[in-house]
Length: 194
Image: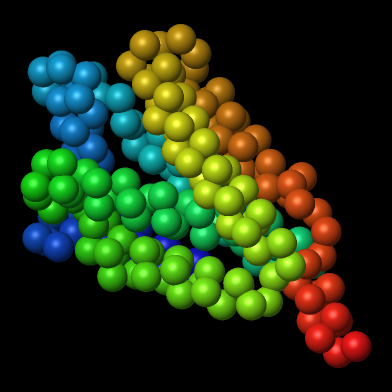
């Protein structure tokens, strides 16, 4: 969770070049470019959307991971998956545009290496590690699909209000509580004692 604080500092406070809240303007320009639309006053990524994304897919999932560990590990793997997918999206965006984007440095320096280090540690401690790893990545990938699709459907195509977008993200953030509810960490540690 601490790494996300540093990452969001780079995204939403001061980026590498000293720009304040650069994530908002950079990503709106990027989205409009992908949509083939001119830069305009109508932006798909509102500040409310940024709030919705961060409170649900980052802080709610992270809180659930902390509160449920070690008895229910899937929220932890979901949060780890969010970090990796987010980091890879920043990296892919940087490569595609061949330029810096707010959050790229912390993605490269913190998110991606920390994910692989954490999974290396979990591999030796978690029963059904591969299942958790794959399911966590699938959940995180789908979270990003829901995030982007919902953002466009709510704010660009105006098919539903933005507050329903936030509700959908909150619901998806609670899903990890319903997946893989057994206790592999405790079982693995207790098996080692016998």
